[in-house]
Image (cartoon, rainbow over all chains, first blue to last red; front, side, top):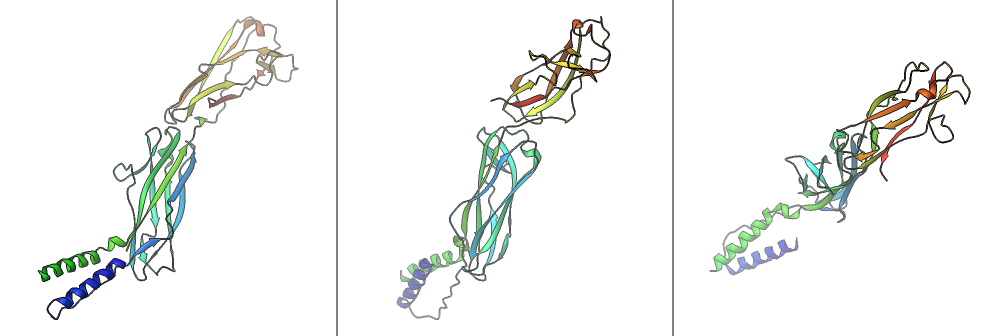
Length: 147
Length: 159
């Protein structure tokens, strides 16, 4: 926002030095979105015991967007995708496929005083980890809220 | 020159204005899990080893039965058997005569074909065979009737 202001001032200055012409100057300020805090969102499946079925975890995160701004929520494929399939990588170098979704994925901002709650849900199929070597598995996905 | 400089500033400004993405917000999402070791039998059925009819004087008899289990990929397992319901003072397993007294027993042996190993996950069950044996001398004087014992078989993660 500050940089926009500077450029607009420059524009006006430049115009003052140039020949006077009928030149309209218009500016539209794009809306912005931001998260309520800078912490990572952590979706922890905890202990997975092979043979104990499908698992799901959810975690919410809050953000705000400028009033009237239409936002979209996107999630990148993470660090270890196989095609479209997200995967966590284990200490042993093996992978556990999982799914990740966000809700809502779009909407209209209502300003900084009205946080929007975004629910992230990760799930693992029962068959995804029945043969997984014991150990810790992790992935990092970038969540983006764009105006 | 003045116009050129002006146009550059103008262009840069319009470019910046059109980049709505510059005002998006990013956040890392960490997805984590810990796969822990476990072992389980493939089915919940009891393993039955039946010597059938023992005729005194019939000599040593053996019977076996097979079951399957699996453990998490990469873990070491142990297989153990307890001493059953009617062991003698030395821990030897004994079948007890149904309706009989504590001395109406037939001693027997019971041995698993493996006691330790490394597992590779639920998709590859491990076959376990239990061999049971009765010495001819253990039932030559036995009273007639039905004898049985129950032993607990345990598959666990190696310590």
